[in-house]
Image 1: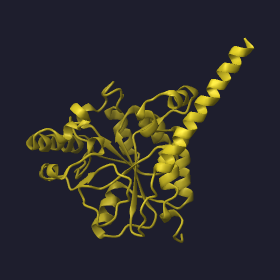
Image 2: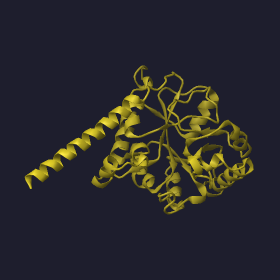
Image 3: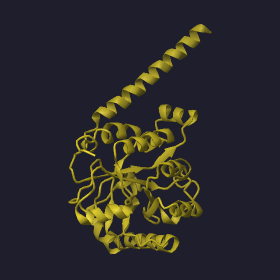
Image 4: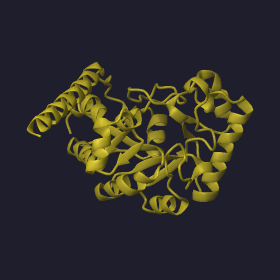
Length: 286
């Protein structure tokens, strides 16, 4: 029995060592963010999981990239917001992002918090933290699937919860497509494989939903899976979109193409190795 316990203990030590090594190796591979004194960090979140033993176990022992790359715990999210506030981040709304982009000048230490998909854990775990800290945010909504259960293994926030969030004064919503959030063969986003006319109509349908439901005249979209090609931009423009957001580890500057605006995918590792090291939080006076 003692021998068995010893073997199990050794295996656990080895496992956690390998996990730590893997995380450290990944962290070292990340580059430092470019810095400009006139720029914005667009921080994109997908999942804010409940901080409990079960979820932490899954994170450490699962091979799921979804968990490791697309999520933070509620405790980590709260800590990240606190860190940003302590370092005098200027939290912008989507409307302010657009205003300052047009103006050609972002306030110092500008940060824009945004979420893709709008699954239930955003309402349950992220929304209370943002309310506590009075930090605004933007949710990119897959409009045809609002309230859907088991949409790509996600339970999406229902319409009453979205309305509650908007009524709080802290949330704005924009499009994450209407019904094109899917992957085709070879992991190609459906959004980029359908005919251009279908793409335009899908975005128009999404914009119509946002207008009818929230009285939003939407001009922005977060591309599904953060991917976009230049050949599809005309179809997006035709739908009335003026600002399109990708996923890329770069700040937004006034010169960035309005249809290829980068957002940084946040997990605990990327926050520590990219956001905390960004010179905008260290090189400027308050």
